[in-house]
Amino acid sequence: MLSRNQLGFLYMFLSVCAFSMMDVLVKWSENYPVGEVLFFRGICGLIPIFFLIPKENYANFYKTNRPKLHFFRCAAGLMAIVSVFIALRNLPLATVVGISFAAPIFATILSIFFLSEKIGKYRWLAVLIGFIGVIIITQPGISNLNFYYIYPIIFCLGMSYVAIAIRQLSSSEPVWLISFYFSVAISILGLFTIPFGWVMPTLIDFILLCMIGLLGGIANLLLGQSYKLSEVSLVTPLKYLSLVFAIVFGYFIWNEIPSFKTLLGSLLVVLSSLIIFRREIYLKKPNLIFKNE
Image (cartoon, one colour):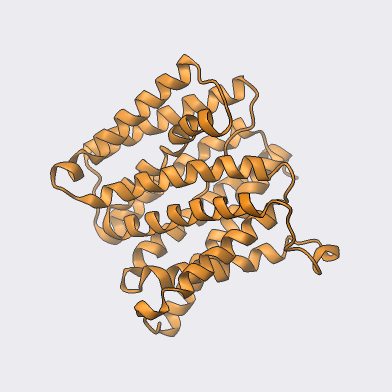
Protein backbone atom coordinates (compact mmCIF):
# COMPACT_ATOMS: atom_id res chain seq x y z
CA MET A 1 0.00 0.00 0.00
CA LEU A 2 1.50 3.31 -1.11
CA SER A 3 1.58 6.31 1.21
CA ARG A 4 0.07 9.67 0.19
CA ASN A 5 3.51 11.06 -0.64
CA GLN A 6 4.36 8.00 -2.72
CA LEU A 7 1.06 8.24 -4.58
CA GLY A 8 1.64 11.96 -5.18
CA PHE A 9 5.12 11.17 -6.49
CA LEU A 10 3.67 8.56 -8.86
CA TYR A 11 0.93 10.89 -10.10
CA MET A 12 3.49 13.64 -10.78
CA PHE A 13 5.69 11.24 -12.73
CA LEU A 14 2.73 10.06 -14.82
CA SER A 15 1.70 13.70 -15.37
CA VAL A 16 5.16 14.59 -16.68
CA CYS A 17 5.08 11.54 -18.97
CA ALA A 18 1.65 12.52 -20.33
CA PHE A 19 2.65 16.16 -20.92
CA SER A 20 5.85 15.02 -22.65
CA MET A 21 3.94 12.67 -24.95
CA MET A 22 1.49 15.46 -25.75
CA ASP A 23 4.39 17.74 -26.72
CA VAL A 24 5.73 15.02 -29.02
CA LEU A 25 2.33 14.61 -30.71
CA VAL A 26 1.93 18.39 -31.12
CA LYS A 27 5.35 18.55 -32.80
CA TRP A 28 4.41 15.52 -34.96
CA SER A 29 1.15 17.21 -36.08
CA GLU A 30 2.94 19.87 -38.17
CA ASN A 31 1.08 18.72 -41.30
CA TYR A 32 -2.22 19.80 -39.72
CA PRO A 33 -3.21 23.46 -39.13
CA VAL A 34 -2.64 24.74 -35.61
CA GLY A 35 -6.35 25.59 -35.30
CA GLU A 36 -7.36 22.03 -36.10
CA VAL A 37 -4.95 20.63 -33.50
CA LEU A 38 -6.27 23.15 -30.96
CA PHE A 39 -9.81 21.92 -31.57
CA PHE A 40 -8.81 18.32 -30.81
CA ARG A 41 -6.89 19.47 -27.74
CA GLY A 42 -9.97 21.26 -26.45
CA ILE A 43 -12.80 18.91 -27.35
CA CYS A 44 -11.01 15.70 -26.32
CA GLY A 45 -9.63 17.40 -23.24
CA LEU A 46 -13.21 17.74 -22.00
CA ILE A 47 -13.61 13.97 -21.67
CA PRO A 48 -11.53 13.50 -18.47
CA ILE A 49 -13.10 16.61 -16.92
CA PHE A 50 -16.63 15.17 -16.97
CA PHE A 51 -15.51 12.29 -14.76
CA LEU A 52 -14.79 14.84 -12.01
CA ILE A 53 -18.11 16.68 -12.04
CA PRO A 54 -20.25 15.62 -9.04
CA LYS A 55 -23.51 13.98 -10.10
CA GLU A 56 -25.55 16.47 -8.13
CA ASN A 57 -24.00 19.30 -10.18
CA TYR A 58 -24.78 17.93 -13.65
CA ALA A 59 -27.78 20.22 -14.14
CA ASN A 60 -25.91 23.48 -13.51
CA PHE A 61 -22.21 22.56 -13.42
CA TYR A 62 -21.30 25.40 -15.80
CA LYS A 63 -22.57 28.23 -13.57
CA THR A 64 -20.05 30.66 -12.13
CA ASN A 65 -20.07 33.94 -10.24
CA ARG A 66 -16.73 35.02 -11.72
CA PRO A 67 -17.19 35.06 -15.51
CA LYS A 68 -14.84 38.03 -16.01
CA LEU A 69 -11.90 36.31 -14.34
CA HIS A 70 -12.62 33.11 -16.27
CA PHE A 71 -12.54 35.16 -19.48
CA PHE A 72 -9.12 36.67 -18.73
CA ARG A 73 -7.78 33.28 -17.62
CA CYS A 74 -8.96 31.72 -20.89
CA ALA A 75 -7.59 34.59 -22.99
CA ALA A 76 -4.14 34.27 -21.40
CA GLY A 77 -4.29 30.50 -21.68
CA LEU A 78 -5.17 30.67 -25.38
CA MET A 79 -2.28 33.03 -26.01
CA ALA A 80 0.01 30.59 -24.22
CA ILE A 81 -1.18 27.39 -25.90
CA VAL A 82 -1.15 28.84 -29.43
CA SER A 83 2.38 30.14 -28.85
CA VAL A 84 3.74 26.86 -27.52
CA PHE A 85 2.12 24.88 -30.35
CA ILE A 86 3.82 27.13 -32.92
CA ALA A 87 7.12 26.91 -31.02
CA LEU A 88 7.01 23.10 -30.82
CA ARG A 89 6.62 22.89 -34.60
CA ASN A 90 9.49 25.23 -35.42
CA LEU A 91 12.10 24.79 -32.68
CA PRO A 92 13.92 21.82 -31.13
CA LEU A 93 11.83 20.12 -28.45
CA ALA A 94 14.43 20.60 -25.69
CA THR A 95 14.72 24.32 -26.50
CA VAL A 96 10.98 24.92 -26.11
CA VAL A 97 10.78 22.92 -22.88
CA GLY A 98 13.86 24.66 -21.48
CA ILE A 99 12.49 28.15 -22.10
CA SER A 100 9.03 27.17 -20.81
CA PHE A 101 10.53 26.57 -17.35
CA ALA A 102 10.90 30.36 -17.13
CA ALA A 103 7.16 30.78 -16.46
CA PRO A 104 7.63 31.14 -12.65
CA ILE A 105 10.13 33.92 -13.33
CA PHE A 106 7.55 36.00 -15.20
CA ALA A 107 4.89 35.09 -12.62
CA THR A 108 7.12 36.47 -9.87
CA ILE A 109 7.21 39.82 -11.66
CA LEU A 110 3.49 39.84 -12.50
CA SER A 111 2.58 39.00 -8.90
CA ILE A 112 3.87 42.47 -7.93
CA PHE A 113 1.16 44.08 -10.06
CA PHE A 114 -1.73 41.61 -9.75
CA LEU A 115 -1.27 40.28 -6.21
CA SER A 116 0.57 43.25 -4.63
CA GLU A 117 3.32 40.91 -3.42
CA LYS A 118 6.68 42.14 -2.22
CA ILE A 119 9.65 40.44 -3.86
CA GLY A 120 12.77 39.91 -1.75
CA LYS A 121 16.40 39.84 -2.81
CA TYR A 122 16.52 36.06 -3.25
CA ARG A 123 13.67 35.98 -5.73
CA TRP A 124 15.06 38.99 -7.60
CA LEU A 125 18.33 37.06 -7.85
CA ALA A 126 16.37 34.09 -9.18
CA VAL A 127 14.68 36.33 -11.76
CA LEU A 128 18.08 37.64 -12.91
CA ILE A 129 19.51 34.11 -13.19
CA GLY A 130 16.46 32.97 -15.13
CA PHE A 131 16.63 35.83 -17.61
CA ILE A 132 20.31 35.15 -18.22
CA GLY A 133 19.37 31.53 -18.93
CA VAL A 134 16.67 32.56 -21.41
CA ILE A 135 19.09 34.94 -23.16
CA ILE A 136 21.69 32.17 -23.45
CA ILE A 137 19.12 29.79 -24.98
CA THR A 138 17.68 32.29 -27.45
CA GLN A 139 20.97 33.92 -28.49
CA PRO A 140 21.37 31.70 -31.58
CA GLY A 141 17.83 32.55 -32.64
CA ILE A 142 18.34 36.27 -32.19
CA SER A 143 21.61 36.24 -34.11
CA ASN A 144 19.97 34.37 -36.99
CA LEU A 145 16.78 36.48 -36.84
CA ASN A 146 14.75 33.37 -35.93
CA PHE A 147 11.62 35.01 -34.55
CA TYR A 148 10.20 31.65 -33.46
CA TYR A 149 12.20 31.99 -30.22
CA ILE A 150 9.72 34.65 -29.14
CA TYR A 151 6.86 32.14 -28.95
CA PRO A 152 8.09 30.17 -25.90
CA ILE A 153 8.57 33.52 -24.14
CA ILE A 154 4.99 34.52 -25.02
CA PHE A 155 3.94 31.14 -23.61
CA CYS A 156 5.71 31.97 -20.34
CA LEU A 157 3.98 35.36 -20.13
CA GLY A 158 0.57 33.82 -20.78
CA MET A 159 1.09 31.00 -18.30
CA SER A 160 2.31 33.47 -15.69
CA TYR A 161 -1.04 35.25 -15.70
CA VAL A 162 -2.87 31.91 -15.91
CA ALA A 163 -1.19 30.79 -12.69
CA ILE A 164 -2.19 34.02 -10.95
CA ALA A 165 -5.78 33.78 -12.23
CA ILE A 166 -6.05 30.15 -11.11
CA ARG A 167 -4.82 31.14 -7.67
CA GLN A 168 -7.62 33.73 -7.50
CA LEU A 169 -10.28 31.45 -9.00
CA SER A 170 -9.42 28.48 -6.78
CA SER A 171 -10.73 30.32 -3.74
CA SER A 172 -14.29 29.83 -4.99
CA GLU A 173 -14.27 27.64 -8.12
CA PRO A 174 -13.64 23.88 -8.39
CA VAL A 175 -10.67 22.79 -10.51
CA TRP A 176 -12.85 20.95 -13.01
CA LEU A 177 -14.88 24.11 -13.74
CA ILE A 178 -11.72 26.14 -14.43
CA SER A 179 -10.49 23.43 -16.78
CA PHE A 180 -13.91 23.10 -18.41
CA TYR A 181 -14.11 26.73 -19.50
CA PHE A 182 -10.58 26.65 -20.86
CA SER A 183 -11.19 23.48 -22.89
CA VAL A 184 -14.37 25.01 -24.31
CA ALA A 185 -12.44 28.18 -25.21
CA ILE A 186 -9.78 26.13 -27.03
CA SER A 187 -12.46 24.22 -28.96
CA ILE A 188 -14.26 27.42 -30.03
CA LEU A 189 -11.02 29.07 -31.15
CA GLY A 190 -10.17 25.97 -33.16
CA LEU A 191 -13.58 25.95 -34.86
CA PHE A 192 -13.13 29.56 -35.97
CA THR A 193 -10.09 28.47 -38.01
CA ILE A 194 -12.07 26.10 -40.27
CA PRO A 195 -12.31 28.72 -43.10
CA PHE A 196 -8.50 28.86 -43.17
CA GLY A 197 -8.39 25.24 -44.25
CA TRP A 198 -8.48 22.06 -42.22
CA VAL A 199 -7.00 18.77 -43.41
CA MET A 200 -9.02 15.56 -43.30
CA PRO A 201 -6.98 13.20 -41.08
CA THR A 202 -6.51 9.51 -41.71
CA LEU A 203 -7.90 7.12 -39.11
CA ILE A 204 -4.50 6.75 -37.43
CA ASP A 205 -3.90 10.50 -37.45
CA PHE A 206 -7.41 11.11 -36.09
CA ILE A 207 -6.63 8.84 -33.13
CA LEU A 208 -3.31 10.61 -32.53
CA LEU A 209 -4.97 14.04 -32.69
CA CYS A 210 -7.54 12.88 -30.14
CA MET A 211 -4.67 11.66 -27.96
CA ILE A 212 -3.32 15.22 -27.77
CA GLY A 213 -6.51 16.32 -26.01
CA LEU A 214 -6.79 13.23 -23.84
CA LEU A 215 -3.16 13.38 -22.74
CA GLY A 216 -3.42 17.10 -21.95
CA GLY A 217 -6.62 16.64 -19.95
CA ILE A 218 -5.37 13.59 -18.06
CA ALA A 219 -1.99 15.19 -17.36
CA ASN A 220 -3.65 18.21 -15.76
CA LEU A 221 -5.82 16.00 -13.57
CA LEU A 222 -2.82 13.90 -12.50
CA LEU A 223 -0.90 17.08 -11.70
CA GLY A 224 -3.70 18.41 -9.53
CA GLN A 225 -4.10 15.07 -7.75
CA SER A 226 -0.36 14.93 -7.10
CA TYR A 227 -0.39 18.34 -5.38
CA LYS A 228 -3.49 17.30 -3.43
CA LEU A 229 -1.97 14.09 -2.04
CA SER A 230 1.69 14.89 -1.58
CA GLU A 231 3.99 17.54 -0.22
CA VAL A 232 4.55 20.14 -2.93
CA SER A 233 8.27 20.32 -2.13
CA LEU A 234 8.59 16.59 -2.79
CA VAL A 235 6.89 16.31 -6.16
CA THR A 236 7.48 19.66 -7.92
CA PRO A 237 11.15 19.01 -8.86
CA LEU A 238 9.94 15.97 -10.83
CA LYS A 239 8.50 18.34 -13.43
CA TYR A 240 12.01 19.02 -14.66
CA LEU A 241 12.18 15.43 -15.93
CA SER A 242 10.30 16.77 -18.94
CA LEU A 243 13.56 18.35 -20.14
CA VAL A 244 15.23 14.94 -20.07
CA PHE A 245 12.30 13.44 -21.98
CA ALA A 246 12.45 16.30 -24.50
CA ILE A 247 16.15 15.69 -25.15
CA VAL A 248 15.60 11.91 -25.56
CA PHE A 249 12.51 12.21 -27.80
CA GLY A 250 14.06 15.03 -29.81
CA TYR A 251 17.18 12.99 -30.48
CA PHE A 252 15.57 9.67 -31.40
CA ILE A 253 12.57 11.02 -33.33
CA TRP A 254 13.86 14.21 -35.00
CA ASN A 255 17.63 13.73 -34.64
CA GLU A 256 17.83 16.93 -32.56
CA ILE A 257 21.00 17.35 -30.53
CA PRO A 258 20.71 20.21 -28.00
CA SER A 259 23.58 22.67 -28.10
CA PHE A 260 25.75 23.47 -25.10
CA LYS A 261 24.07 26.90 -24.89
CA THR A 262 20.64 25.28 -24.75
CA LEU A 263 21.70 22.94 -21.95
CA LEU A 264 23.48 25.69 -19.98
CA GLY A 265 20.60 28.14 -20.38
CA SER A 266 18.05 25.46 -19.40
CA LEU A 267 20.10 24.64 -16.30
CA LEU A 268 20.08 28.30 -15.24
CA VAL A 269 16.32 28.57 -15.85
CA VAL A 270 15.67 25.40 -13.81
CA LEU A 271 17.92 26.71 -11.02
CA SER A 272 16.05 30.02 -11.05
CA SER A 273 12.67 28.28 -10.85
CA LEU A 274 13.84 26.08 -7.97
CA ILE A 275 15.04 29.15 -6.01
CA ILE A 276 11.64 30.82 -6.49
CA PHE A 277 9.87 27.60 -5.54
CA ARG A 278 11.92 27.13 -2.37
CA ARG A 279 11.25 30.74 -1.32
CA GLU A 280 7.52 30.16 -1.80
CA ILE A 281 7.76 27.16 0.54
CA TYR A 282 9.89 29.07 3.05
CA LEU A 283 7.47 32.00 3.10
CA LYS A 284 4.54 29.53 3.25
CA LYS A 285 2.75 31.08 0.32
CA PRO A 286 0.48 29.14 -2.08
CA ASN A 287 2.71 27.71 -4.77
CA LEU A 288 1.99 28.68 -8.35
CA ILE A 289 1.21 25.56 -10.36
CA PHE A 290 2.29 25.74 -13.97
CA LYS A 291 0.80 23.46 -16.58
CA ASN A 292 1.52 22.88 -20.23
CA GLU A 293 -2.16 23.44 -20.95
